[in-house]
Every structure is written in structure tokens, then in C-alpha cells.
Length: 573
Image (cartoon, rainbow, N blue to C red; front, side):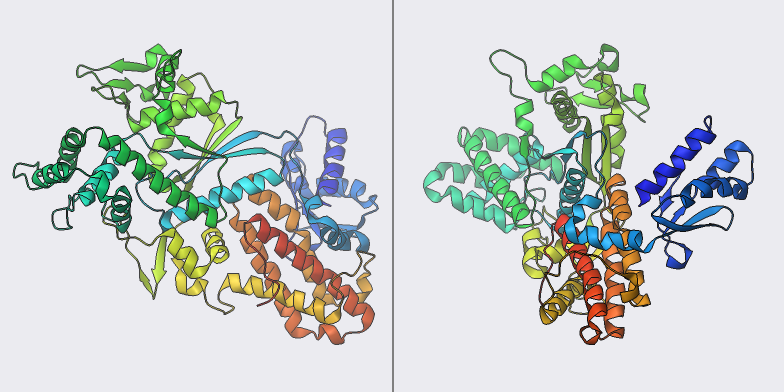
């Protein structure tokens, strides 16, 4: 009824206040005693037309009172318009949810072609619990926007062409050569997964002379003291020692990591439309330059310069960035920023209206430089949107677990899924706003108590399923529902159900799926309270049938919303 009410008010304003078009809201008040709907149009319009809000409100009341779905209208407070629906209009949400809840989701007028890129973790180790939050968030907003009618494409950007891949490959070679932890370079990757890749390579593929040379290299006394300089020196020497085998081991390591990442994400309900390889940006064809070179050629000439050392700089300060950025190093290798610019040009050239990137909060400073490059390439930077996600801290036995991919000391995403389950993990990752700090309490996630919101909501759904089975009314036809057959305390549940379309729209518009979690928590709390206060199955038959229709709508709302979030609602517990 929100849309219908808004149309009535807007039509009246357009006809009687032609020069004062305004943006206003029709919402559902928390307290049902203040009406089923409330409108703030009079407050906003009064300021524009220089009248008292009450005067404007009294005018807006007149067309609303003529609507057959409205019972009465009141002006309250400083000029709010409180609207009370007829019984049939109020209860209609129960019928609509039971028939098909998707009819309550308003489709966008102009669907967009949207690319959502998320996770995009370097393929240098298994995903850990910190990556899970961005993964679930990206996957969920993709689900939400699809339901609104947008054309959604999801993508994982594989950083397979930079220094980190060289460090990964070197780390595997060290394990192939039997380098133990005492001698292992501090900047190498030390996880068990490195040993597993080395084992996959196998002894038969290793020349003993190469092993000897690697062992001599590690024990070389004049290695650089700085950890990062040392690993770069070792990589340079390893490439010479291993010759053609370097590329083969690198490919094996990349393949192993991508298999691990894809398996973990798939078991978490996350699948991408495309895994985009960074290396493809740097590969020229027989007839054209590489995508990276074509990107450089597309930048405005006034937006880059070459310094005395040979570095190519992108002058992002031309677009408000705090400093200029190196695009190409003096040895001809592109920077991470350089390939990122080429990647975003490729996205835009594929015809997407909007690019949504899900980045960790530590990438906040990266936003302005990418936006600047998009402008320099001749596109509108407003097409580029970034949603920042805080990594999650893992709490177990009351203590925070420290993690480091380099040292191999981390809590993998697959372990978390095994321990708490896919659905509970997805729920808790979505439980807080994505850009806010989060502590993921493993013990809470697996507890069977009302303090665990996931358990509390699941238990509500299972309880309703049990009621329906006992009453043998699970398939009660969607028919007329009479208000006089419902206890007054059940009306607050209907009122909460009526909020679903509004909450869903807010979650989609603001890309805030946690609002749906909060909504389910509130809806379920109302149900549990009602259940504890009423012996539903012993109620008079007409009342029992009416109550079970409302509860069926609650069940379907929980089930549909959970499904949208990638979670399965349980029918028994």
C-alpha cells in the first residue's frame, strides 16, 4: 500500500502545488497505534510553500480519505499524516506473501547491467575467515539486485602476474629443495599447503643438481639483510637456477591455489560468472597490443609523464587525488595500480552501466585514484562504486585468533564452514553492516540458545512447520482472512509483515543486507512471544485457521529471506 499511497499524495501535490515538486516518504511506523502508514510530505512541502505543516497536512488528508483502501487519516505531531487502512487492505499482505512473496518486490524502472567484483584475494594461499565476509556480502548483494530486476555479472579478479606469485613459486621451490623452517625466508609462504604443492610436483620432476644449488643459495652468507630485498634477490637467482621449470611450478602453484579457492567458495554457496586473469591484460595478440598498452594509449596525454628514472606516472592529482601514482616501473613492469586501471577499462568496454567493487577497508585510499583513471579514460567516474568491508576477527573460547597467511598461521574459511556450517557462517557474516568492525564468535554461532540470533530465527521457522504439521493445515488455501478472528496480539505480527517490502527495498537501495537479518530477528521475536502466550492448536477453529494463515506468511517470509541470503530455513530442529 506504500506505493499506492505515495501515488495519491504525489498526484495531489502535482495538481495543487505545481511548482513545488518534492521528495517525500511513506513509511510504516514502529507502533501500530500510530497507523499502518505514515507520510512526511506535509512537513517538507510546508517549508517550500511557506505555510504551517498542519495546514498543508489538512489539505493532503482530503484525497487520502477518498481511497477505498483507507479507513481513516489523522494529522499528528508537527504535521505527520498517519493512515489507517481498511481491514482487508491491512490483512492483504498475508494473502500476498502466501500466494507469492516476490510480488511484493518492486522492480526497478530502468534495469542496469552491473558488474560486481569481490573477494579477488591473491591466489597465494587458501582463503581465511577474513575473506569470507566480503565473499558473502558480494554474493548477497548480487542476489538482491537480481531480484530487483538488474542484470548482474559477478567476477573474481585473479592477481596472477605480480610479485606475490613469484614469492609463492619461490616458496614451493624452497620446499621442493627440502628447505626447513629454520632456513626458510621470512617473506616466503610457509603454510602446509606449500608443502602439498611441492609434493604434487614430485621427486621425479626434480633434478638433484637444482636442489643442491637452491640449498647453496639459501646458505649464501651475503644475502641482503632486509626481508623483502632478500626474497627479491632469491627469486631472481631461482629463476636462473630452475630455468624452464620455474614456469611449470608457477602454473602448478596457481592451479592448486585456484582449485582451493574455488572449492571453498563453492561450498560457501558462492560461484562467479567469470574468473578474470590479470595476466591476460599483459598478453599482446598477433594483431593488437596488450590490453594494458591499449589502456595507456587511451589515457589523456596530459595525465601521465615519465620521470628521469624512466618511471611512467599517472597524474591523478589532476582529478583531486592527494598524489600522483606510478603506472609503469622503470624496468617496464606495470604496477598493481597499472593493471587495475587496465582491468577497469576492460570492464567499461564490456558495456557495464555500473561497476561495484567489494574491497577491504584497507583499500579506502585506492578509491580516488581508480576513479581518477576512469575519468582520464573518458568515462564517467560515477559508474564506479566501492563498498568497503571490514575483515572479521575470529573469536574462539573467548579469545581472538591471530592470523598470518605468510607464516601459515591462519584459520581457513573451509575450517570455519566445517565447524559452524555454511548457513550459520553466512548469517553471522551478514549480521552487521559490512563496513563496521565485526567479531565472529564461533562458540555463539553453534550454540542452541535464544542468545544466538541464527538459532532463534531457525527455531521460529521450525516451530511454525511443527504447528502446521500438528494442525494438518500446512496447505490451507489462500483465502479471505477476517480481522475479527485474530487476537489483538497477532495484529502486531501482521503489521511487521507489512514492513517486508519497505525493508527489502532499503536493503537493495543501500546495499545493506544486514537490514534483512535485523528484520527477521524482530519478526521472529514477535512470533515467539505470541506462541508463548497462546495455545494456538486449542483455539476455536476459525481463530486457529486465521492464526495459522498469519504464521504461514511468517514462515514463508523467513524462508524466502533466508534463501535470498543464501541460507536454508530448517523445517525441524
